[in-house]
Amino acid sequence: MREIEAIIERYGAQRRHVISMLQDIQARFHYLPKDALMEVAARVRIPLIDLYSIATFYNCFSLLPRGEHVIKVCLGTACHLKGGTRLVEALERELGVREGEMTPDGRFSFETVRCVGACALAPLVLIDERYYPKMTQRKLTQVLARLRRPQPAAEAG
Amino acid sequence: MTKLRINGIEVEIEEGASLLEAAQQLGIEIPTLCFHPGLSAYGACRLCVVELGDGRLVSACTYPVQEGLRVRTHSPRVMRARRMLIELLLSICPSSKRLQDLAAEHQVERVRFAVRDERCILCGLCVRMCAEQMMAHAIGFVNRGYRRRITTPFDLPSEVCRRCGGCLYICPVCEVRCQGVEAPSAVCGSCMTPAPTCPPVYEDLACYMGAAGECGTCVRNPRMPDSHSPTVAGRRVRV
Image (cartoon, rainbow over the protein chains, first blue to last red):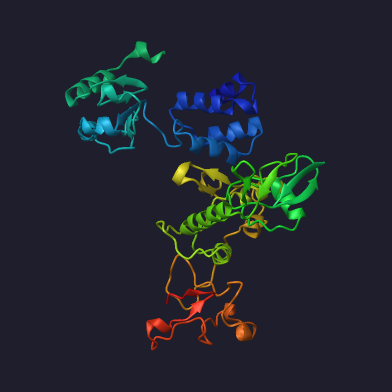
């Protein structure tokens, strides 16, 4: 757990920076591993339960492994009316997993969200925090195909 | 020292004290569920709500005293708010004796909300007990909104818990109410109402020990017509 150690050191193991540490861990591993939480608690000297409270309070943290690419389908009112559920069905077919699950190869996980605040662009899909406006099943298939291709250059970012 | 008036009575108390402490100093009883003198005030249950001179409703346990403040602890508005709070608390924890007793004292006779028996009102007393008195930090709140609950990290037996039982000792809703002779309902028959209908035999029968309804005063006789159904503290008993 060298990387975790480095993340903690980056913030001087200070209690007031734990949320930033958790965000960095989440960015690196796509979720918060149990061992990572325990290490942060021990190094920053805060009770594990306090860290667990923070990790479960914020929606941006996940305690379950997430795929490399996180696909979020908006099902807010506007997106729902514009056919967001059809996108959910298309994704379930395309990826072979249900909402909230991760593909067995660990490349994609797929969840639904309520309104991302861009209703004029409905129906929306968010992939790795990038907005894909006015989504259709065909466009979705194309985007997935692009993401599936190995992209060594993009991995560095 | 700060001087203020509670229910028209002047009281003097050291700076930084809460309205609740000032009222307690005067002997005014304000119901609370999440307050304990040995723990930090948390303001979770809101039952200690009081009305300030400017008409604001604030929680007495977390509001510090101010010079010249006027406070009413049992005004009609406060009582209405308290009754609503009790009704809301009952809807998530109808199994609690403390809550049922409060309901009886405040004449809360029905629960208009969907009842979910959570056995917890999220008052946080156990969390504060564990952290502040036991220095263990074994339990805490997890999740958020309607999914909020109290548990250990990862829902596993805690490594720092010493099984002291302080959390159970301090819990205001662990004590389970009696069901009496009634069918399960959100509000109990309140045999423990401060003014029972059977004062001469109440103590002897000790109906709160499980013999509820033996004397017949508080229970409707199935053979009697509805119009004769007896009442407990002025209210009709539902059987």
